[in-house]
Image 1 (cartoon, rainbow, N blue to C red):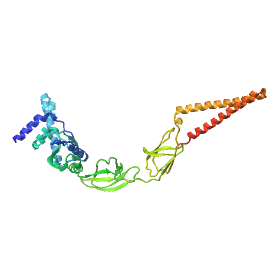
Image 2: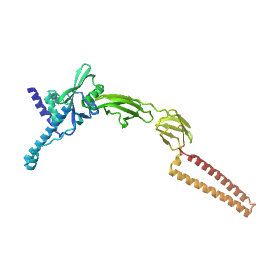
Image 3: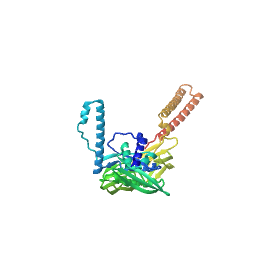
Image 4: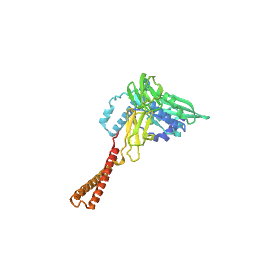
Amino acid sequence: MARRSALLTLLLVLLFPLFGVEKAGPSFRVGIVSLDAGLEDMAEVVAASAKAYGPRIHLDDRQHQVMLEKQNLHLEQERIDALHAAYMKQDAATVAALQQEQVFGEISRVLDCNYTVEPYQSELATLLRSGKDALDWYMQHSQYDGLFILQSQAMGDLNRILVDFLFIERTTLLDRLVQYGSYRSLSKELDAHMFRLLGSPDQGALCFEQGNTAFTVFVDGFEHTAPDAPLFLPVGEHELVCTSLGYEDKHMTVTVRSKAIQYITVSLTKIKHPALQISSQSGSATWFADGRLLGTGLSISLLEPSYPMVLSGTKEGFESRILQLDTPLETLEVSFTPVELSNEVLVLDSQRDFYKRLRNTILVFGGYVGCIALSKTYQTSQPLWQVGMVATSSLALVGSVALVMELASYAARAGSHL
């Protein structure tokens, strides 16, 4: 007894500044404390398991009564402190109000859990090993309602790991031998113990292990978009549908058991669509599907297309084409726009050049007509008129042919687009 008192006194002297007394909230606060060095990774495993399978604690009658008494004691202490402060200030009205009979509120049977991993401290670990009094004191001054206590013991090449839970009484949650440091191997077993300890008796959990693709789960017609986290369901049979774009729906019936975790691996089958033939109206191009290179050519075939799909094509000197395909197709024709036609400034420059050439051609034709008219009026036998007519007619003919060819090229490049 003397040794225990001495240890508690040392605890008060060394560690009291570390623990500020905070006002208790409406949550169930749990500390995770290691009594041996080197258990930081194990503490993180315990914290992850607790947060996943114990986000709330469901109190039984005894636990509910203990929490209610604890709350009432806390509120009564607050009233006494306030009464003392009012006496010191000689505030008669406040004293009178605080001396009236206090009615304490009810506490919920389901409380949100808040978990905190405490860093390892050798002095604290030594004192907490001294017995229940030290643990109770630590919980009181840390404002914890429960405590996970982690211990380890070296046994040759193995490590014995013990995880206890302290709330009302101390319960051993896990006692296993592992290869030193391989704490992750304890995750599934720890999850099961954690769920049995903190879970609702009216619920079970489904844990989905993805097969070949991400998917969405519908349970009894309601969507659940996070299958990577445990899915808590009422006890009984449920209809599940797993869906993913481009894959066949998978239907299954599961029976959920109280405080039990079921692991389900979902592997979906791709929907088979007819082959897709892709053709270019603008010559050979390079094709991509969902960022994956398909090849280069005037046309290309996709034997097992999946939808939705992002199809893209590139061609030197032309704007790239990006198409979103949501429904199955068998043939697809794609045309590309030349770079100069995709830029408004370049298009305007091209139009200005065209109009200049058209103007020059019209002027040459006018010169040719003028030469003919003048030759019939003045000295028709003069050889210079013959030279002028030949020159102007040749220029007009060349300009007209060039203009027609440019118009044909422009029309071919503009083309029609998908």
